[in-house]
Length: 256
Image 1: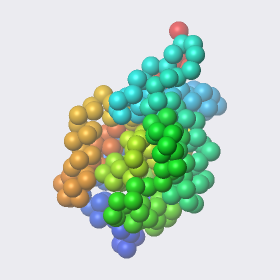
Image 2: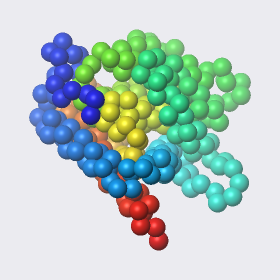
Image 3: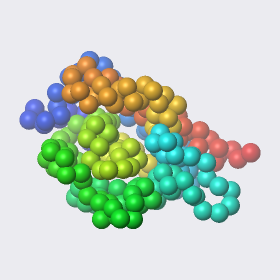
Image 4: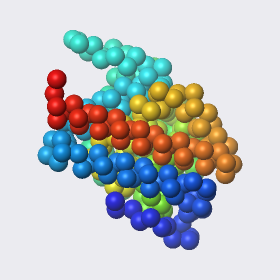
C-alpha cells in the first residue's frame, strides 16, 4: 500500500485513527484487498476481473439510488440512473489522475456523467455545478484538499470520509449517491488500497441498504460515535467487497 499507517499529528483526519476499533478495521480491510490482488486469476487477467467488478459496482450503486440494476440483454440501457452509473464506471480510469490533482474538476465530470439523463434539458447548465447553498463550496474545497494530499490517513479511512461527506453534503441537484460512491472508488484506487479496482463494496452497501443509510446519517452528524460507526461500516464493506472480488476471480479461473 502507498499510504502510511500513521498520519502526522497535524493531519486533520489523524484523530479518526484514535477511534476505538478503527485501526484494526483498517488493517483487516487492507489485508482482504491485498489477498484479492494476489489471486492467481488477477496476476495477468486482472483487466477482465476489474471490468466485471466495475459493472457490478455500477449496478449496485444505481440500485441504491432507486435505479433498475438489470442490464438489457439487447438494446440500450434506458434506466437513467443505471445509464449514468455505467458511464461513471467507464470513466474511473480516465479520471484517476484528475482526481489526484484536481478533485473538484473530477467531481464535476462525475456529476455530468451520472446526472446527464436526470436533469431536465432546461437545467442542463447545472450539470457539474455544485448547488449554490451556503457552505457547499467551502466544504467541497476542504474535501478536495484532503484528496489532493492534506492527509496521510490510510486509504480505507480517506475513502470513507470522501464517501460520507459527499452523501452528507449532497452537493449537486441529482445523482449524488452515484457520485459519492464513485469518488470513494477513485479514492480506494488512488491511495493504493485497491489499485486495480477489484473489490466491490457497493454490493455490500446494497445488501445492507438500511444500515448503510443509517450509518451515513450518523456520519453526517459529526458526532465521534457516528463517524466511528460509518468508518467501521465502510471497512466492513471493503472486506465484503474483497470477497465479491475473489468470487469474480474464482469464476474467471474456473469457468462453468
